[in-house]
Image (cartoon, rainbow, N blue to C red; front, side, top):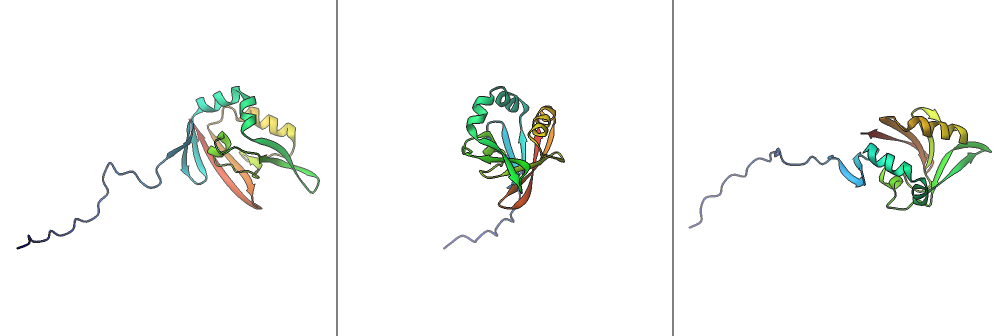
Length: 140
């Protein structure tokens, strides 16, 4: 004789279960929140910015021109294990706008770089494959 079957328990969410959209570390000090949002530890940024030579080996950032006019920076030769890849950038991406400021000259890019060092939130508009995309960063 077989014992009677127990009714199936309804699916419940355990307090210990991780939600599917949980943050996950994708690079040193970088957590991916969504496809376009990342959290970055300030200590990692400061460490990387101290060694610009090493950072420069992870990807080349070259001026991008459209119809003869300066139009942002293009990311090329990016290593898969680079900080840039960890924060959602891909080879060929063109960085066009940072925190609402269009990058329309090399001097402006340098000024933005200096101004952004201490920001806690960054919004970067890129062009990828002819389409505009916005990446968001929270620096902690």
